[in-house]
Image 1: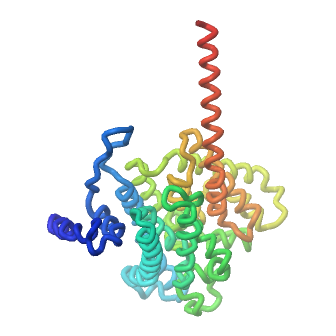
Image 2: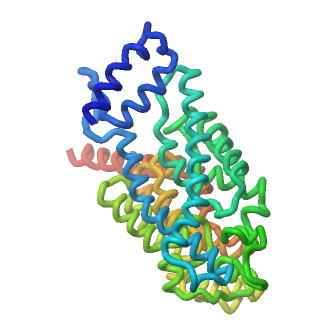
Image 3: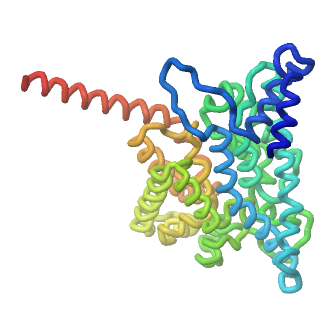
Length: 397
């Protein structure tokens, strides 16, 4: 690493003010600070947090936490493909993994290539530092997409997420909505036939690479159409089911959650309150399941409340999306309220809108909008309590 640092240092004069490439200083600075701890010192005046961890290191921790879901997603993509093709018994572990890798790695390349290209271009045009936020967003977007989404659709979704979802608000740290979910929303409403149905979740099914009569429906899709699912709880927990690339394995997601919580990067309060909110709504529906007006609604209402936690994208959303520090609530009490309402509304949307059973995305985006309002009222309540305490102290004095 010392040799690399020396090489980067030798290039620095070319990119500093007065150098031939000074216009591209933001690009040089982005690479340098990604590889090495920045050499900036905090100003002598004013209050500053002094810590060895900067935003790039925080983003890298989230990427590490996503790796278990990514690797399992690669294996499961191949597993589902060969199962649909009736070849599961004649292929090896590596056949399955390599099939998934050949599908998912191009998605990652497109996501990072397009997203970082826009970030670098805007930074150079405006003359400011590169925003680090896309380091995580670039990984998240492919993980919440179907395996067979055309790469050009993925690219357009990335453009929409970066430009409309983030840059128009001022860049990283200023966006109202989670950028990765903004990309998924764009893809869902712009290209619904590639984001829903039975064939989009398994590689090759759109091209007819499956045995006749094979259904590629997800567990939520089964409930939405027939009111029941044949997938076992253990398969849903481990992730051997159709679904978006990174959201099927609750086990892999839990490993990521442990990493985020242990490093202090992810809020355990949002995660736990989200689970409590989902269980509360699930138990309410269990209690009134006899009032269901359709078999599909009854299916969603009657399954055990805890099964909602291992179906669809709930676990992935509550661990990696709801905890986004930019779009989530900031106050400690606000995090409990914010997370609880996400879980509560996610299950409510599943039940009342079987046409779109994946309610976690809409629930998170809804609460992204209300997060500042939640924080406002939490702060106001704290101010009123302190004012009341001051008045009591004044009276006693």
